Length: 136
Image (cartoon, rainbow, N blue to C red; front, side):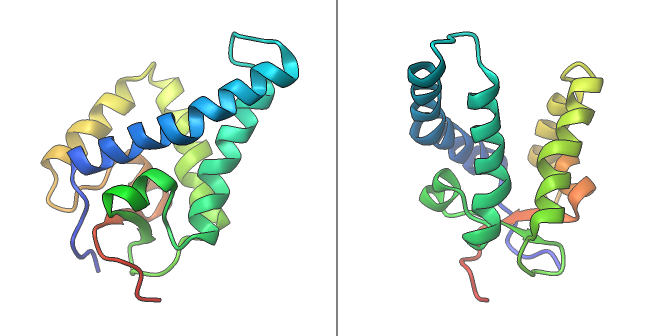
């Protein structure tokens, strides 16, 4: 049962904060370790692992989501697992690439206009973003 879905602006701000607080340091670390400025495999892998693992071990939060007060949960309100996060990050990423970014634009409209605020990646993974703090 979907309760208190997180809206577009909160989710966008959470993603921007993750990019600044986590993404930039990972990019700098990747550059220091590899000398590659063009988005190397190491940097992409660390970013992917961050979005895959942190919500699983931190009750659906990433750093940015925690700051803005939203978290990822399963549609039944339960904790997300590795399977759901794999679908949410990797499989949906393939969908967004295969649609040349159009899927991402559609997802933004879905979050802004749907009552449950679920994007394509939420539908694929059986998740949603809520403003409820953890109650597990």
